[in-house]
Length: 269
Image 1 (spheres, rainbow, N blue to C red):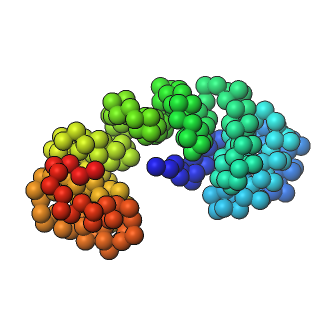
Image 2: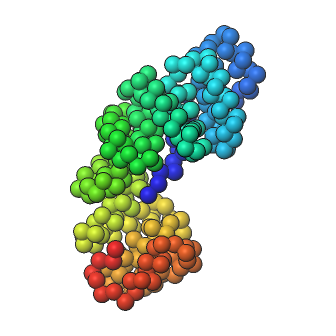
Image 3: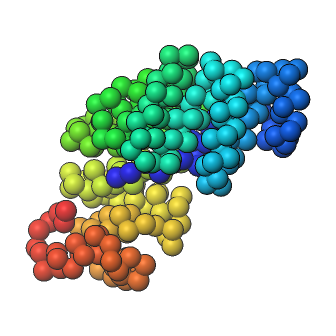
């Protein structure tokens, strides 16, 4: 289970800065002389756009400039951490933590910083440390992505094999945002494993309504297959198996289905 939410994180950080990314680099040089704080923010947002389009070298140049203007910029330090995390080499992954920690030290109440730092820690499989960051973000009232922090928290608890806390976090995410699709698909599987097939089916069906039947990944389809089987929906099961076979023939989920075809167990795992 990976976190691959760089585009969303970059967009959220750009929104947090509240600066339009329509000015050129040359204009930021002039602006830097008149208003250093605004220039640093603009360069950081330009870097976010470069990261979004995978132009990491240009992003790095913009962030170096932003930090030279204002080394205490929370946004620039956060975005540098995101950039180095996205590049992904061992040396840059190690450097990324310094920037995340600096952003936290500069503003320890910034929920977006905590959420981003948590995703970094999750990627490094430092799950207990990630829990701490997600917990802080998830109880920050007014944070627009609080539901996403709760989804992240729930997924981290799953890694720690604490299904009760994971379920609670996902339920909280849905209370905040009924459109929280990650929470819905995770709850569908958790409830399925508890043999609460009706509730699990409702969660899965809601997930499909939000994402679209044809937009399901292999994992969601596999959850749907198992739920259809548990509820003796032979037609629905065949439809989902055919979709899984057609779209993801080499997936672990389809291979698992082939292994379990003759199994009589009530719950396919």
